Amino acid sequence: MSSAKRTSKKDEPVRYAEMMEELERILEHLESDSIDVDELSGRVKRASELIRLCRKRLVDSQTEIEQVVADLQGDQDDQGDPELGDTD
Image 1 (tube, rainbow, N blue to C red):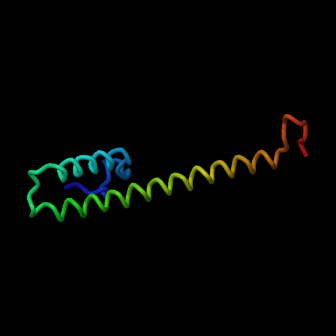
Image 2 (cartoon, helix red, strand yellow):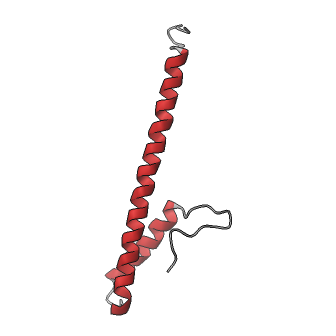
């Protein structure tokens, strides 16, 4: 099994889409009748780890986006509203 903590050649974290694809493969495998009992615990643990990492990535992205929006709004407030001709 691969780890979401692994990095690519450029030391970039594993992409969200890759984690979701791995999670989907695990879930498909878990839903099949052919899963080996010896693999079950490891697969469930890995799925749990991927879910945790994906949730964290979503929260981190939301926080970053909110910060960018807040910065843009702050910049607009500092410059005044160009539509109103207010340039302070």
